[in-house]
Length: 450
Image 1 (cartoon, rainbow, N blue to C red):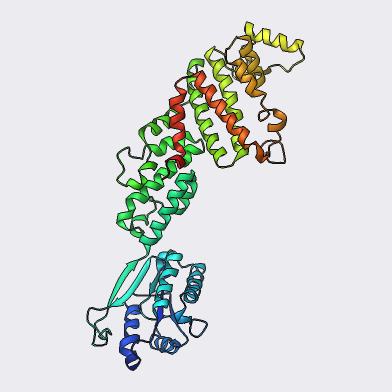
Image 2: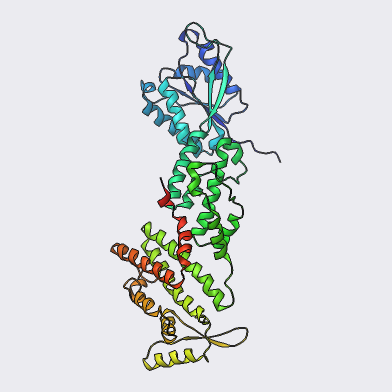
């Protein structure tokens, strides 16, 4: 089965050339440009009202090509760069709508007024059309006109302009923590056409930035396993792009994500150490959500960190809130006290494999256990648990849980203060949390923005 040829188009502005030698100075060079590149699915001529007759003559002499003439709609518009741009951009948009790919469209801006040529080049940049061509020659006559028959076709690209513009946008998105947007606007270095469509000097930084954004995006959505896999493809060597050095992943970032990607240990001490890392990272994640005005997401993360701190304190004492021994003396005492006060008690579960019965404890019961165990941080945890932001009747009304209304925007200041208290509590629980928070917060590049 033969391969269907790609759709290819060329657009050419049509000027006057030397009116006394229209054939030699205008039509012949344009025919050379059209015929020099094989088969075109469509040739679009862009004349003014004055030069439309030349476009028609060119169409008559190139019967082997499907030619369309799209003249400027108004007389005198050839000197109006905005009017030319609007017209040319609409023509290119129409080709893209018809299924032509950006890199299969070529624009020849040789002929026409300077506003026409400039407008066509700008429209190509606007629509990410990379292929430019210009008919030139080193030989000119006494009037500065190209000597017929000596023309050469010069090819250029808009890729440098468009990709630098995308890199500028990517830098802003990096600083705002919008890594998904970086992936949307930068070419994928793993695409089979990446190297052929990207100027060689830009391949390195675009490829690096795209891979960094993948890594950060996975980390930011708490996909630690995905981030770990991506990190193995990244280099820890110095970056040769000074402007981008602040975004380059550092060794401490990789090691932090590798730690978080490890499975939860079986023993309580191991679980405590692992969950401490999770709590720190979720706190930093929530701080970024809060900074971006995502109060619902920030609140959920704050609540989860508060839960995790309680579970960490239990792990340190050999208790797993997800699997408590009903025969344990501490468990029995807490159960009895709560029954006497008509408070909710533990949830009873049964292991499907062993048939063994065990208890589960929610956040409130975790606090009761810590109080019974005499944990020194229990009071602070209980105080934070009664904060208005964490009360069930408020939190559960979030649109992300059971409610229908978003949280009041006036809670932002209170939430910032609450995150500060959570950070202090994590550091009180584990002095190493200070260093861990520093690493977890490095994903916020807004502070590094210059």
